[in-house]
Length: 482
Ligand code: SF4
Image 1 (cartoon, protein in one colour):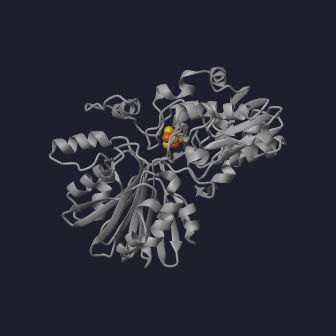
Image 2 (cartoon, protein in one colour):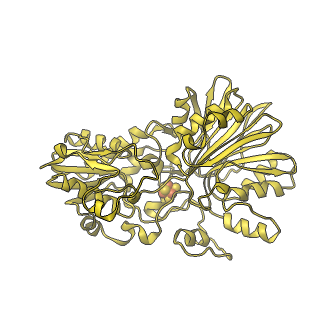
Image 3 (tube, helix red, strand yellow):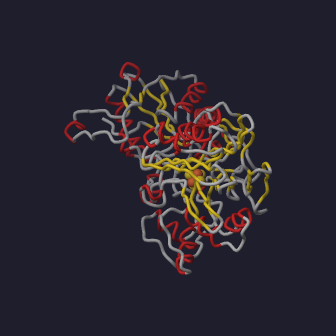
């Protein structure tokens, strides 16, 4: 029996998509957001500008639930930005659905972000003490207030001033009536790419969205870079020289779509290499290799290729379960109602199975999958994880459990093996993971953030951030703790 609500994966926060200068801007954003749907399913929104005023629509749910032909028809203009959201900060409600739209002294402004500001609460407290009134509980509104309060009338200067204050992880799209601005934090923690379709420019959290609409990828936005699109063309500048690349390694391990390229590295191929490396580091005698769908299939193929053990579809995902499906009763669960995943009995019965997964967060999912395979007759289940143990929370927009809930923070590998009921359990090493993904930079972590594995956070982390993740009330007097 398996229940999708118990999937205890880390969750991506958001996806952003922007278009500059295309006659079918709303349609392109709609398709772009659909391609980014895996990055957030709670809400979706599009704002477009006809250079005089904005039209927009937001809603709770999937892109196809929020937008129908009539909503798309109501949007007009040659540029726009869109957003899909999974909330890690701010409650899950329509008010927080992005892009957020504000009026300020020079007109309208729309903002869409992916990531998490580490000092949002400090800035917000300060602004509230100075009289600012916030309409949402989202980090993104902090950026809007900073822009609105700037002494600069020029929007580019005002945005740069705001960027010099905010800290943390952000891939940011800002639109005024006549300009589109993109910016990436100084570590480039979250992905953001630039694409082109005919004479139009596109911005997307992942390149898979460019492929969906027949566009080409130009390049990734660089850490600390700001791009401006307006009637004068496209301009790039760095708003800070203090940059140090630290792309989230989990984008490669789990979050991003396999057909996306990040930093020029294809996600599927990186996952295959992770699986190959895992086979080299942790071989085991077995009859079949299977991957937990969908994110671990690539790593399982890599493990199978390197080990010579055949890859089989031992686990099948039911793709047609709505997010709000009717929960089976405890009685039906006990009778074995399988909601999300099923084991393929004819593949695993009587076999020694290597089960590849990308990560273990709380361990409850792994335990259930091992149980599924054993109920389907697997003689042995050897669990191999294509990343190191996750021992620390993420402060950069990824919804991890609190430190206490992270199984690897509390238990040894042997204890974890016993908890999930596997015959053996092994994790990929840090060096193996970094080598397999491929080098992005020259520092010890090769240009990646690996903080959830080794607690080496690439930015300052504030007490309020830690408290928030540990579900303690945010403090007002807040000092950096790392
Ligand atoms: S802490 Fe982990 S999940 Fe968060 S940005 Fe760094 S690598 Fe990614």
